[in-house]
Length: 210
Image (tube, rainbow, N blue to C red):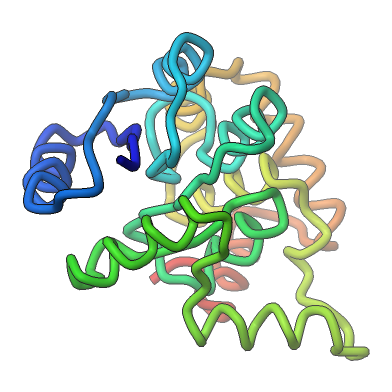
């Protein structure tokens, strides 16, 4: 039996996932978490075969939580289930240690296939993500500016480009306003830009935000 931990802050999503998994004979929901702290607490107290992780829960960013999960238990497969298109987070998630990445508009059958695949020690990477990974490894052309950012800086960049204030971002990420301001300064410096407007235009052009 594959024991799954569902980590998502939306009760309806968790309920929907539980319903899908309840219709299988080999997968069971052994735990739920609605925030990042809850995920880390759960995996420290109980053994799971797969963690299904939403990448944008309250508190620490999902990429950061993924890193902490892998630090605590590098053997546990983590399957990212996100509202964000593959080109926004998939490569970063795979680099950090995710065993797979799916968007929430995937078919239930695909989710089940992915869970079974990562639980058996494999990777579940959709064709579009595989192509991007291959290009990322083999390409000798210059990489986009945002590739120079850390995962936390990338998270802040997306929020800035979405029009959120420094104080709002600080609250959402459970960090101080000063820390977010420091990240913003680093982002501007690394990307050689002067203000939020330039960052926003860049993000729209790169498809980082819609």
